[in-house]
Image (cartoon, rainbow, N blue to C red; front, side, top):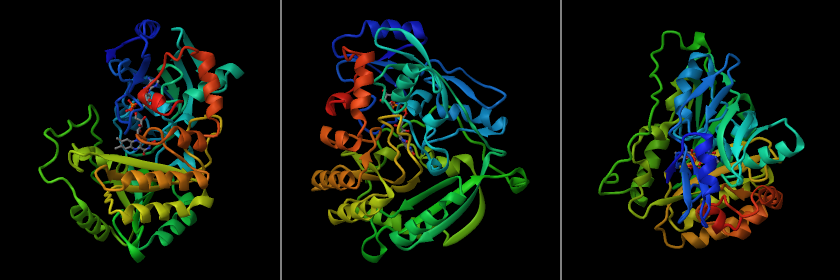
Length: 431
Ligand SMILES: Cc1cc2nc3c(=O)[nH]c(=O)nc-3n(C[C@H](O)[C@H](O)[C@H](O)COP(=O)(O)OP(=O)(O)OC[C@H]3O[C@@H](n4cnc5c(N)ncnc54)[C@H](O)[C@@H]3O)c2cc1C
């Protein structure tokens, strides 16, 4: 991996890239091979950490800036990130390249919806300033870079809008549901009343309890609501060190995950309204658990995340049933609603409807077959899998899920006819 500081260094590295090509990497928080380029060059942009928050709340930042490092400055100005994933340890470049979504997609769209312009270094080493409302050619590259997984070039700087946040707290309503149907019905009926919505689904419950879950919804709290309440300041800076050696000698197994889920479900309030939570507790519960990614033991885990339109809602149930049938235990299964997707970004993941993300240990007999079968169900429902989480889908699954893949390929071959920008993911999926 080569650490690069400014546009001139990026440009020189791109022009000199060898036969296995080059790829920009952010904080490496993608679950699969999106930020890897085996045998080739990988550029680390995290050395340059400067950014500016303008009076109108817009942020101009170098690509390697970590989202979490922006939060204190934004909060001080009564603003917050327009979209944030479940960890704050990702970079601006990674947020744009994967067009990440948060708990507010149904309301605010994905990260790319808030980007005003990007500076991109393309395969010939040239720096382009691309505005979302620029010329036809600019827009073509802009929209393909949003969600383009680093395959159109290296983003070196970007400007994006933020949203108002009067305090550093969130007013949260929590509700517990004993089965999947009632949980999903509540989300359909009520998500529009909240800026943020997310459901934890019990990935081990079966029978009548299948898909039971805890729904958490909220909005930024107003000053009067938090007055006098002690709130933990959001910690920033580097990610906690991953526990090494990996978390204890007894990694989670089917039994312990079942017990954890049971306890988590029972501990959740049946219905609690108006609880005031700090930003970190609400948005980033996993960030405080150093080494959480080792809990499944040495075999590791993968995350399976799909999106389906509302008409494919049944796939949520089928996926829980099928994974349950092989005893694949999950302590982290997350269900969210997506609002309208942005069809102008050919590889952007969200489509209006549902998205379910399930962590599963890789050492489960029959897992590969079940996931292949689920791929077919997702595709038949008009859905797709998320590239930032994927480590196993086939080129066919990609092509069938992303109908505008050829559009993306056309932009890429205009910009980069020799395929200088590449990744293990791009090779595996024949993008
Ligand atoms: C605990 C956890 C929770 C998560 N929750 C969510 C969630 O709720 N929603 C969601 O959408 N995602 C989620 N993710 C996934 C994560 O947000 C994305 O994978 C994101 O892209 C990671 O950013 P990164 O900076 O680590 O980029 P990396 O993982 O390093 O790279 C991701 C992709 O971006 C490209 N890239 C990075 N920097 C640049 C650049 N400067 N120029 C061009 N391309 C670049 C890389 O080539 C690669 O293809 C989660 C991940 C974790 C670990």
